[in-house]
Structure formats: C-alpha cells, structure tokens
Length: 239
Ligand code: PXP
Image (cartoon, rainbow, N blue to C red):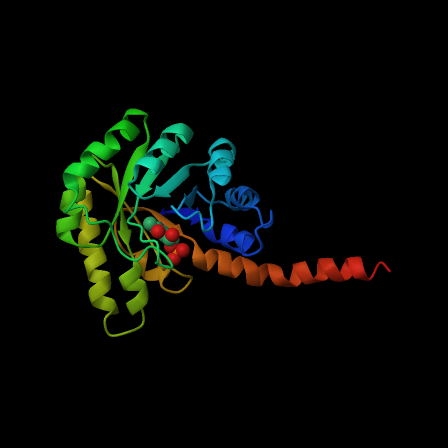
C-alpha cells in the first residue's frame, strides 16, 4: 500500500496571513497523524513565508510518525537539520520569487556538491531524498549521490492531467520510477496531486509514499467550514 505523507505548509500560510498563532501547524500535524498520515512534511523556506523555525523545532519533538524536512541545500538549512535530526531530509531547489517549488533539483549539475552536502546528515542517520524531475539522467545522477530516496516531481503530470499530454507525462513518471527502483532507490512522488489525478498514480509499481499538501489543506478548509460557522453561531446564540 502506498503511504501518505501530509505536507502542512499551507496551514502555516493561513497563520502567516495574520501573523498570529492560529491555525497552528503543530495541531494540524497531530490531527493528520490521528487520521492516518504516515508522515508529516514541512518546507522551511529561506524567507520563512509559512513554516518557521519554531514550528520545525516543536514538530521534531511531537511528531509520532516521521518528520520529512524539506529544504534547500544551503549551509543554514544543513545546520538546522543537524540540530533537529528529522527522520528524512528532502532536498529541493528554491527560488525566492516562486509561489511553490517549480522544478526538480538539477542533480546532474551538482552531483559532487550534493554528495558532500549530504554526508554529515547521513552520518547522523537522517535519510536523504532528492526531489527530481522524472528524467532518466536526473534519476541516475541521484542514485550516484548516496541518497536513499528520490521524490519524483509530479507537477508536469498534474498540470497535464485530463489533456492530450497526460499520457506522455504519466509514462515519464512510470519509466523514471522503474529506473530508480532498478538503481536501488526508494521512490516517493509528489507536487500538484489532488483527489482526481492521484488515482492514476497508484498504478505505478513500487511507489513508497506520496507527499500531498495543497489539496488536503484546501479540502480541510471546505469540509470544516460548516462546523466552524455552527460553533460561532452557538456562541452568538448564547445571548
Ligand atoms: N513534494 C515536494 C518536494 C514539494 O515541494 C511539495 C510542495 O511544497 C509537495 C510535495 C506537495 O505539493 P502540493 O502542495 O502541491 O501537494
């Protein structure tokens, strides 16, 4: 059975809209775990636009499943990862101006750097995942870094879902997953998956875990709306 990693970044996005304390991603992580999430992912971005240092520190102590710490391969993030010791680190490219992670890591271009970068993390027992586009060159390069996992970028498949280009994007994912497994990597996937396009992904053999965020948080807002309004009405009706 494919495992589900829940990305809770956008709970923090809502909190940051007011700069206050609610909704708290720590509580969201606990509820996700109680609902069956197999792991919790957070991306601590350089600009701290959603998840912040306090969040990762507390989550590293309170998460009962696995904390997957998504980060850019910078000195600052390496230091934080070595302090909090998450279960796994997923290295992603990061551009300041992007709305979300736009593409996979160019492992081919920075293979030697990444090999050295992950060494101290691996030494502490942290599992390493590299977020890559479903291209054979990137998958092969990832397998030569010492990383245990790759996370295949499903963004293109998600974008082309239900269009003429869907089959081609799906087939690239399928082939990349096959190659990665043959090269001894454990294969995760994520980005842009939702309640509709995820079904086809289940047909890819050997996938270990899907990391899904935006669609789950979006649904949580809508599903929770009725109860939230009723709770407020109950208070107003007291008078
Ligand atoms: N995996 C990675 C590496 C990501 O960067 C993201 C987005 O932060 C996700 C999965 C989750 O993507 P989404 O929020 O579109 O489900």
